[in-house]
Image (cartoon, rainbow, N blue to C red):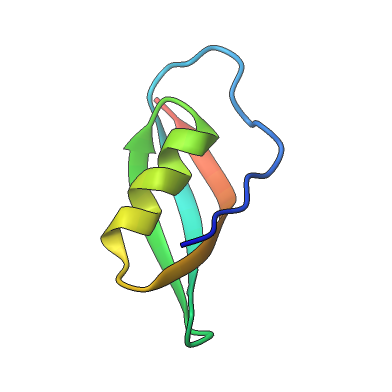
Amino acid sequence: MTYVSCISLDTNRRLKEYQVEVITFDGESEIVYVIARTADEAQEKAAAHVPDADYTMVQGFCEY
């Protein structure tokens, strides 16, 4: 599994709900919503939810 990190969206490390796009090796795209403190943590969690994840990209977040 490869993972692509994008620009960090977090400055205060509070919990946020991230919208993460996960692309599989087959080229299919799936949107996963995860709760995390950082964009990197969100991408790792999202990749763990999708079998055959190739890469991830944060699409947005909502701060609590």
